[in-house]
Image (cartoon, rainbow, N blue to C red; front, side, top):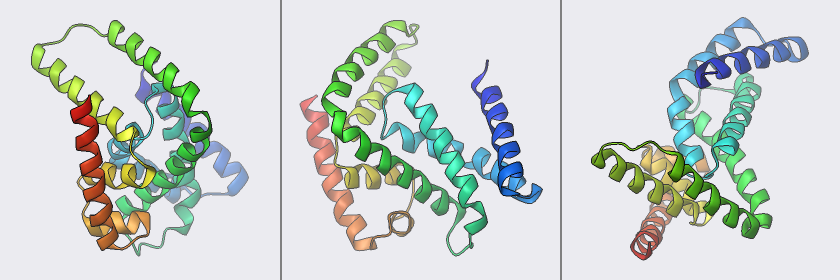
Length: 195
């Protein structure tokens, strides 16, 4: 089945459960659908910055979507929707990273083997797109090696968020965003040069 069809079915299941258990309104469902559609690309880019395995990326997307659904009634519009959604995503991903730190050694060896398997299964593409794809993979892999606070700021910055928006998502000062971003860029350059 197509991912968009699966996502649509999963959304329907989520809506039905929420309606029965939590009594959410049709207006919330329309708002949720609009937000997920509008910010799906942003969420997927953020997730890729934290997780390499596609199956876990999909699970994280679903978990983030569920958390957005649960938090929808508490949205007060004192921040932009993009900031609200990114904050929820980063909270879920920070929890995911904290849980997986304990098993990082075993995951690193399986990440390498699954990465090699994925490269062998890919169909040949034109040279330029392959080169760009490889650069993006190296960048994502290098970002995953950064400290959590560096991963957060660099991922949001790469999504085009301003220092102020990043500060609102991470609940830190804009000055601290600048400091963390500079340190993340320096660490990222070292990792990319070493690769």
